[in-house]
Image (cartoon, rainbow, N blue to C red; front, side):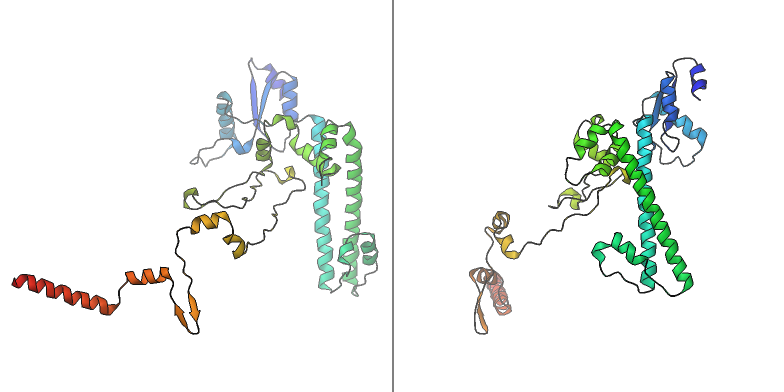
Length: 326
């Protein structure tokens, strides 16, 4: 493909969507002196009424957008960075497989009512020694248990070997300095730091921290009723848009907030400012009788009783008849 593009009359520009083919073609074209744009698939404009999707129509749309600079390019990683990123993602895949294998073993033991009491030391050396002594009675069930144990042991060995390889390659990689800086943060060690560097790449390509958060999908999203007039005091949840591999070690959990008591609410300046000029509705009781407050008496005086309304009506009719006779 690169040799074919070089033979075309200049100037030549190439564009294709980012996908499973990687960046090998983009690096080869750049090395041959041909401009190449690897477009982000999620940001390619597509008309809502255009529901026919073919390779020819997609290629024509890419050409039109390339001519008007309407494509959003993605960063083309170097071959070394892409190789280390594949290694980090392979380790993440093994970690997910190990978690599922452990869940399968746990559900098998639960069906046979076999429980490990010391849950604080689960999946440690002591737990593994206890699992090797479990007897389920039935031959088929015992064979299933041994197969699950063998799968878990194999995955643990593969995970440990990949982690050791990552530790050896980091000091010689372009991310040696960023990884060392990220490790200074609390809760981030080598694997988390390498995962961030592998997915983000060059931190300097983001002009502000807000754009970095946009790329990671950790930007808060607001949902308000009444056309946005009502705003919640609590921070909205993160969108978590994009690939989840860009956020190693992050969760969507939010710390619980203790409810405020009525006494604390009444002592706040906001509550006092709203309650100014508002009549009190308190009343004092003596035995079973209650005495209305001044506010209640004022409101009750505004609404006359039925007898008062009837007397007023009869007096009005008498006044009207007197005026007619006069």
